[in-house]
Each structure stands twice: as structure tokens, then as C-alpha cells.
Image (tube, rainbow over all chains, first blue to last red; front, top):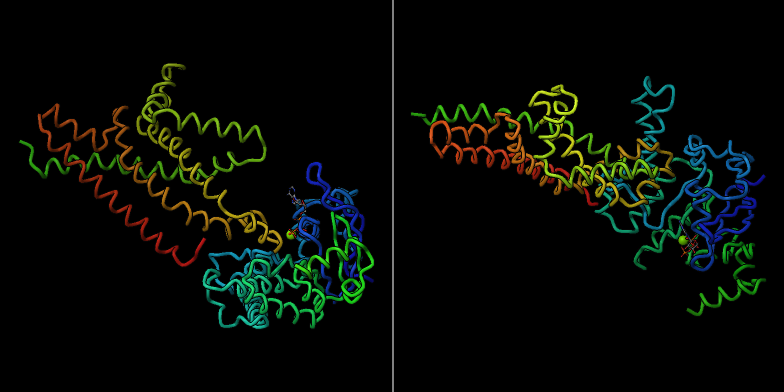
Length: 261
Length: 216
Ligand SMILES: Nc1ncnc2c1ncn2[C@@H]1O[C@H](COP(=O)(O)OP(=O)(O)OP(=O)(O)O)[C@@H](O)[C@H]1O
Ligand SMILES: [Mg+2]
């Protein structure tokens, strides 16, 4: 059974149709690379999955549970969106760390706030917070930032900031973690450390959707590649096929342009 | 003959009202300004329009006029004196400064990148949590300089309240000219304002230093 099933998603902003009948699914533990030219709708698709945009049509299922169905208003209540989002994590291109909180707090904050909703929070407060901090330390260690826990975001390099953002998403253990061009705001010499962390996650079978313009990386890290153009998924398949032997003209065109430029 | 001590004590009596008016105005305007700023940013158009019109009227007319209206209008219109002098002054100042603060808040809030809200949202935070835990302190840091300007202006603006016969500092100082033909007590009031504003400046500098630890 696929962990994620996306069917018939479409989305317009005013009269521009940005997503046109998007269909795909993915298996648990896989890494999906989402590629395509600028403006093809990649970010919008990730934002729909994370409930930052509401699709006009379509269904999103995770583990066979319908999280969103455009034709069923019951699945579209603001009050429930907040919890449904937790199936997904999102790492932004621009990190969006919380500047007034140190690295550790950036990672623990959301989890601490969620813990407050637990019925046993009052009795076991100390223990719960202790566990959260412990988990945060582990995750930060896994992205190589145990030395920086008490630093503030502005004291870190872009690559370090993005690794904090990854840790912040990971600590909530989402089913699927989405990356929107995680390295494109970074200086070229800093992209490597972030890509390495993501590769490590792929090796540990984290379910991931990665929007990227780094084709070599997409090819190395992914199990499935989706190529989007003009709001549609034009081609999908294993990386060897999409990169090595693309079937669609538009895919060929895109890759040619990329590898020439 | 008025001794220096005597004058000082009398002026201190007036200064008490200055401080009271200052403190009550802040007490009202700091939170009310935030509520007004939410109104002026509301996605519900009629509310936004109404709030912005209100802010325009309050900021577009002299505070002195507003003082007079709040104090005298109820009597002229309904034949009742709704408020005492001090209450009227506090209401007029409170509303006036709320509107100024609301625009400062709005500027501060609108300057926070959308990504900060979205980062909180995708981490499952509630709206209120996002505002209190993420947005608020960043806004405070951003608005500290314009707020310090307004607050210091308020110290001196309190002297407008003499128009409805509040016996604040300048009122007392002026009394000496008519009652005892002495000019220096009025000049002396300046010292009280200077010291107050000096202390407030230090307080704002201290807060600014406290918030230096992060960058927005
Ligand atoms: N909030 C919005 N309002 C109006 N149009 C939007 C909005 N968000 C995105 N669009 C439009 O939707 C289209 C797809 O945008 P999107 O950001 O999803 O593309 P993308 O594939 O992520 O591109 P890039 O590679 O440049 O990041 C673009 O034409 C964009 O202008
Ligand atoms: Mg994009």
C-alpha cells in the first residue's frame, strides 16, 4: 500500500491554472525527486501537500486515510488542518528559522507546544520536556550540529541553518518530509553539507519528496523522479530512465537545456 | 516670597498628574493599539475600512481638540457631564495614542516575512502560539525605535491636558506667572521633563540591548 496517494489535484490562482490534474503515489521509505522548469508548479504542489494552499479539486491520502478531498468539505476544516499537516514536514528554500530562539529551541518549540495538548502533560511535564530535549539533541547530532545547539540562527552559515531546519522538521517524525529547493539559497560551497544530510536520510529510508534543480543529486538520491511541466506531471519513473532514457519530448528538452547550461 | 523648596514641592504635585496621565495612557494604548492594528489588517473589508477611517480621524485632528470634545461634548449634547477631568484626559490620550501605536504595530507586524508564519503552521502550531512564540518578540524588536519616539512625545504631550484644567506640571508652572509674577518656576518644569525623558531613553536603550542577541 502506498504511503501517499495524490489524485486529480488541480489548483488555480485567479485565472492561471498552476496545477492540472496531478496524480502520483509513493511507497514508504522512498525518495521522490520533483524536477521541472521554473514556474511549472513544484512549490505549489508541495504547499498543497502541506495545507498551505487548498487545491481546487482532488484527493490526498496518507496511509489510506483521506486527509483532503476537495469534494468533501468535512475534510477541509481549518481546525483539523493543523493536526493533518503533521503527516508532512516541509523544509523551505529560505530556512525560515525562528531568529529569537536558539538552535535547540527551534527544534523543540513545536513539539513542546504539541505536548501541552497531551492529557498527561501536567503530571509528567518535566519528563515529557526532558524527552523532547533528548530527541532534539539526537536529531541535531544526526545533522552534525551538536556543537551549535546554543547558537542563534544568525550566528550560523546558510548550510548550518538549513540543517537546523531539517532537524526541526525531522523531530516531529512526519510520514513524509518535503524539501523545496533546500540548497538554492546557499552559496555553492555550502550545498554539499546539506545534500549529504539529505542523502543520509535517504539511506535511512526516510520518505521524502525533494524539489531540486540539482539534477546530479536528484539522480543519485531518488528512487522515483517526477518531471513537471506547465502544471502537469509529464513523466515519472526511476531516475535511470527519466535521466538516461526520457520518453517525452519535453523531458528531453528540459534535460538537454539543463546539462548544456 | 516663594522658596525654591516650596516651588519644587508644588511642581511635584503637578508632576504627579503628569505621571498618572502618562501611565494610564500607556496602560490603555499599548494593548488597545494592538487590537486596532489587528482591525486595520483584517481581511474582513468593512472592519478594515472602519478601523482605518477611525485611525485617520484620530491622527488627523489635534489631540487638544479631542481632549476638549471628550470632556465637553457629553455635556453639550446630552446635558450630562459624563467624565471627570482626569477620566476625560485618560480616555482622549488613550484613544489618541492607541491609534499612533496601532500604525507602528502594523508596520512591525507586516514586516515579518510570511515564511515565519508558514514555518509555524507546518510545525502544527496554533495561530495564537505562532503570534506569541514567534512573531511578537520580532515585532517588538523592530518597533522599539519608533515606540521610544512616541513614548517620549507622550511625556511632553501630557501638558496639553491643562486645556481642560488638569493641574499637571505646566499648569502649575504657569500659575506662578499669573499668581506670583514669577517666570522661573515654568522654566524649572523643563527639568522634570528632561529627567523623565532621560530615564525613558535609558530604559529603551536597555531593552534594545536585551534584544540584541538575535537578528531580524
Ligand atoms: N500565491 C500565488 N498567487 C498567484 N500566482 C502564484 C502564486 N503562487 C504561485 N503562483 C504562480 O504559479 C506558478 C507556479 O509557481 P510555483 O512556485 O509552484 O513554481 P515552481 O515550479 O516552484 O517554480 P520555481 O522553480 O521557480 O520555484 C507560477 O506561474 C507562479 O507565478
Ligand atoms: Mg519553487
